[in-house]
View 1 (spheres, helix red, strand yellow):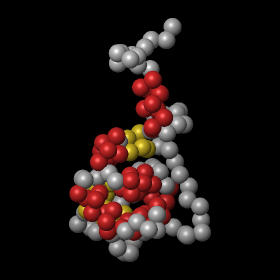
View 2 (cartoon, rainbow, N blue to C red):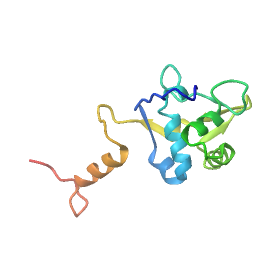
View 3 (cartoon, rainbow, N blue to C red):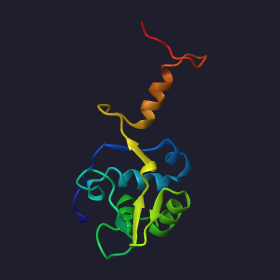
Length: 133
């Protein structure tokens, strides 16, 4: 990825609630970038395998540095491995596990946090769903 080019993003995926709950802020940012930046998606807009070293592009280091140059790629990788979010392959690549991200709600152009708040507001104080008439 060229440093001067502006990254392009798609809103096809979002991290699962579990991934958001178990990851640090840095881990969440890296996963979110990986599933939305076109530079790290394949032609079908799925997250690509990332090389651990410079043998091919893109690399995990490039991903992390694209998110925040102050993040240490090895620290982020260790967290993602520990939490089971990624898998390190014998080929020297890192695979983002499919259980880490889900389809974004189609046709809805709002953040997951706003959707959760809106969904919660449809329930009464007793926790039951309110029907609007």
